[in-house]
Length: 150
Image (cartoon, rainbow, N blue to C red; front, side, top):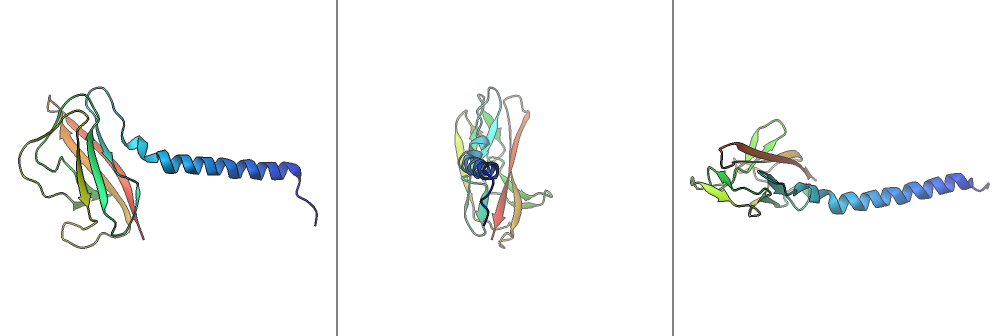
């Protein structure tokens, strides 16, 4: 058997090393982009990961990542889970009282992957949306996409 050319061996080693480094980087740092602090109005949604197994609880953290207070029409802090088509699947039960999230404050919700009608969610992509208002009543909105996998 003839040995592989030296250039091919080097290319394979560099490719494997690069792929490994990129894989570790995206695995450990992908969720850091969910939380970015900004001057002015900003809201962030943070989950512990973007890919969840079916039936696994999804912890949704809403963070005021800006420097001004944000107001919400109820205690759900504007959290909704929809399909990519906009169909509503989940919204936390909330009291209809005005809620405020000060800069750097957060609220946590747990979605057990149940739909509004109580049935289980199916495998697929879902959008988590948060909507609030700043002190001038301008809408502040953020969304992220998560995957539910078998």
